[in-house]
Image 1 (cartoon, helix red, strand yellow):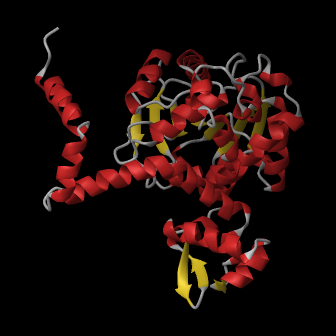
Image 2 (cartoon, rainbow, N blue to C red):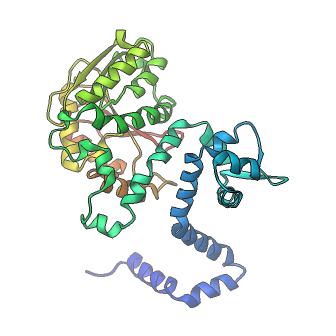
Image 3 (cartoon, rainbow, N blue to C red):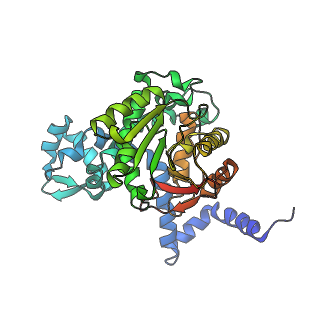
Length: 370
C-alpha cells in the first residue's frame, strides 16, 4: 500500500521527536522554548500522575478539607488534628499546595485551595476518590492486568460483572457499590437536568437504577412524572427503602431481575441507562439495548447517561475508563459514533448528543425507538 502524505509526515515527526538533540535545540531557541517546556511538563504529569492521585486521596481520607472548612490553620494545629507529626503534615501540605488543593496563607498557616474548596462541596466526588485505591492496587502491575494474569480487586467490588447469576447476589455483596452509586449519582443527575427536561414525559423507567438516587433528583424537577426502577433484587430492596424514606413510593414502581436476560417492564415512554452501557462489552450492550427497545413504544425515548470517549478537551478520559473497565472485568469506553452504531442495530435512531456543562464526568445521548 502506498504511504500517504500524512503517514510520511508522521514518520518524519516521530524520527525528529525521538532525537535528543531536537529537544535541546527546542529548549535553547526562545521561539520554541514555551512549546518544549509544555511538552516536558506534560511528560512530568504522566510520570507523577499517580503521586498526584495519592496526594489527593490522602487529603480526602484524612478529611483535610473538612478540617479547613472554617478557615486557615497553622501547620502545628493541622498536624494535631490529622494525627500526623508536624514534618509529615508539612510534607502533605506542600504537596497539596502544589496541586491547588490547599493554599499557603502566610504565618505558617494553610487554607483551602481552589480545588480543595470545590471538593468540599461535592461529597459524591470525594466518595469516588475514596474508592480509587481499589483501581490503584489493580494497576500496580498493569502488564499483568492486561495479560489477565491476576484477579482484580475491582471485579470483586462490582460482583455482578463476574457473576453468572447476578440475581442471586445478596444484600452484603451489593451494599458497597450501591452506596457509592447512591452518593455519586446526584452529580450526574444535575448535569442531565441542566440540559434536558423530563416534564415532556409521562413515566420514566430507570434501568439499573441502583438505590434510586437518579430518580429522586429527576422527581424533584418533574413533580408529575411517574417513576419506575429496575435492578437486581438485592439492589431493588435498597431502592425501596431509600425512595420510601424520600416519600416517593406513591408515584414509584420497583421491579427486579436481570436486565440482560429478563423482560423489562413496559408502560414507560422514557427509559434511562445511567452509567450502564460502558459497563458491558458490545455483545452484552447490544442485548441490553434490544431489551430496552422491546420495553418502549415506537417513538419512545432512551436516555444514555455516561462519560463518552473522544469528547474534545477530555480525550485522556479514555485512558482512565479503558483500565477501569478492564479491572472491573468487562466493558469499555465508547465514542458517540460507537454508541450510535449499537443504538441503530438495536432498533433506535442515531444517538443525539446533548452537551452537558461538564462532559468530563457526564454526557447525555438521546435516541428514539424506531
